[in-house]
Image (tube, rainbow, N blue to C red; front, side, top):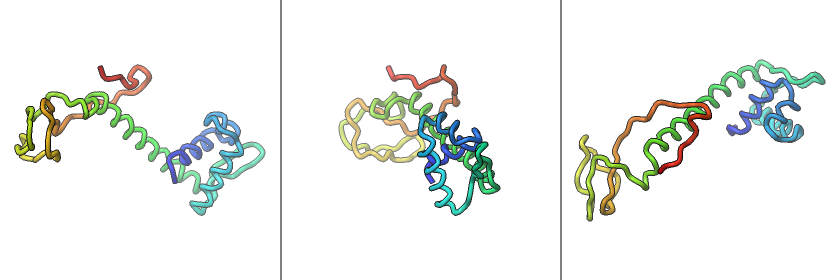
Length: 149
């Protein structure tokens, strides 16, 4: 199961309607219905009871909704934390002042903790970062990804 398919299912479950879910997902209702039916075939379980008034969860659907929300929250959290670290450190191709100094040849020393960096050579003037503390997570539009200056 892919995260995209899981998001489709969660949206249908939250909306209680394939039509409203399709609109929210910016896709057609038939395409969404096909995707959910394929999920049901792949899982070997009916997830939604379809009626003229909408869709309701089966017991298997309730389990998938609970577990699926947890999985999607974990994916969102992983993405957010990764972006936060990327924003705070910048691209590793643009190193920050750190533990190792410039070198013209093979990197033969070890870091403060005695761990040899995984690089064989470091360009003159490059700095090697061995560890960092991730910044606190920020959410909301005011904390969108900043561009490195």
